[in-house]
Image (cartoon, helix red, strand yellow):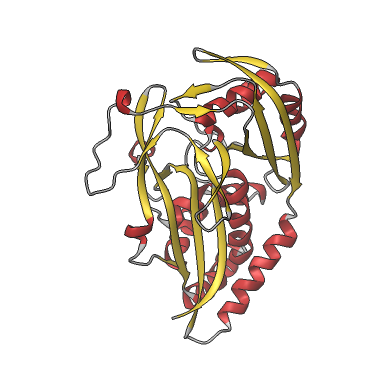
Length: 328
């Protein structure tokens, strides 16, 4: 299985009639794709003890205007975000469904690899009318743009940023901002015993990058549990988490199969510890003959294509990442 020929497809869709949906709208996206190509149902199917799926979808998005007149994109799904310290979930009956409007353009993203591209495009080309819950969904128009990701080129650019930052003075730090655009469900890869790896609603760096780094080690033919866990510890040490994270990450309640469930949205800004990064680069070369900066750089790209955490193939864990240097 190859993850290093990543592709992002932006799909625009217009529906023929209004639909009111309380369930997570990524389920509608998944049903839409499977209706066009039933073979994709096997790709989306859950599996245990398998390599990560090379496919990721998002919920529906729409575009709106901000107060300053700029376009902004918003995820479309029924949600409840607590405004105080109370984290108690609301009753599903009290949550209002979202309205998918006739004639309005919505869009979503698909992250996949080259080997699955033909199946995904077949699904997109055959979409018409299908059943979703109590609704008959009729697609009026659909179009898409395919973006082939040059993993080597883009990872080299990130590696150069990391190397350049190491040479800077102590008054400057590299900041890595991760935005959780769709509800995100993380697990702690350092927790012992698989049953103990429950959902984690804290943006720990090793939890965010565990799946893409897993993918990279598999693709290099270097995956070993011991090596993977060591890389997770290195990630934990390389990224410093600021105290402001408690103000920038939010709990969100969403509906899935008529059940109200928690997830994480918002953003986190990590700071790269240059001294530790240098040490990690040296020790991974010496002990495992691995280029940690290369693996990290490629993991940053794959995270934005394939998503992070659990449920990537069902619309969770869609993120964007930006890097910039700031003054201490």
